[in-house]
Image (cartoon, rainbow, N blue to C red; front, side):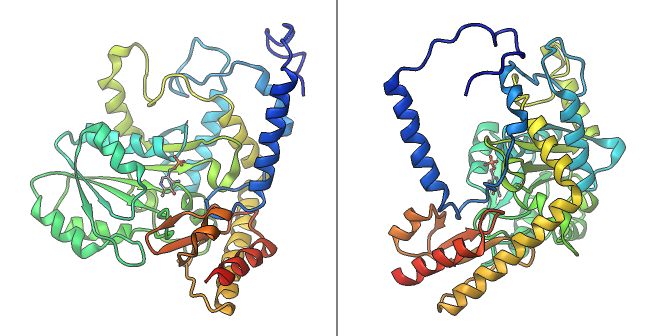
Length: 385
Ligand SMILES: *Cc1c(COP(=O)(O)O)cnc(C)c1O
């Protein structure tokens, strides 16, 4: 494929061709990836998408540097589309219209870093509480931000243990808590009990606190089911992080960070010496990602995502039935596409790119994980056990 001719100022410059040997290397890479893609069932990533209609945008040096709502001297940006994407996610998560800010991130991890950063800026002496089922990147973020933190036990189903949380909070009542909660844990798809956590805060008369919700995967599932677990701004979250490449699907990682504007304004003032409104974690930012997310959102709409959610949940139920028929006990949370089963033999783990943790593994029934793929996986697991 050649670069589009009518686009950027560099598009017409002659490009040196790749050597024959390098072409062959690319062909080898393509073949390996195509093979691996046929057994891709262990990660919460949708592999079904087609962005070819947007191909010509790759011919431009797009960059969304700066705040999506601030004027920028770097004109080759997609801030308008970024604003629309953020507004759409804000609606899905019941964020107050006049008090919400957000931006398109490099992925769920950056959104979590941003949420903990906001919490710590509000409460510099604060203590972060998070469950042992929390994504591995959070421990690293806590080190980077050098914030006091305590890990809380999880229940066997992956949700934060409210008894342990209450006891731990009670021991440190002099310190404002920054609660890092999960809506869809990585291994078990568990949603922490946000109303339960808030009841504890009320009970202990803790009035100064911050709540960030990591909704990497389930932030794009719960808005589209009946009777979702409470997880969003309507139930007291101050900030939220959702991955873009997981449920929506994208050829590169991306995500969305959302926060109460009032809180972000305080941070923005704190860093005003940098020059303009420096509200994001990164400087140069991906200008393609907002257009890709916008494209899927406009094509599918809420009804399209509702249909996909239903199909993925049905596939999860199908997987549990097939495992049961093979004598393997698998389970999932009600609104989760993460199907947990006993860790199989290492050869099966490698062949299916399964994520494992201690004695469990999971299959995640994303859009491309269809009944024939599930049948093949279950047969492999059963044969090896
Ligand atoms: C995937 C995931 C993350 C990290 O998100 P990235 O988009 O991979 O950076 C964080 N938390 C949870 C619960 C996840 O599943």
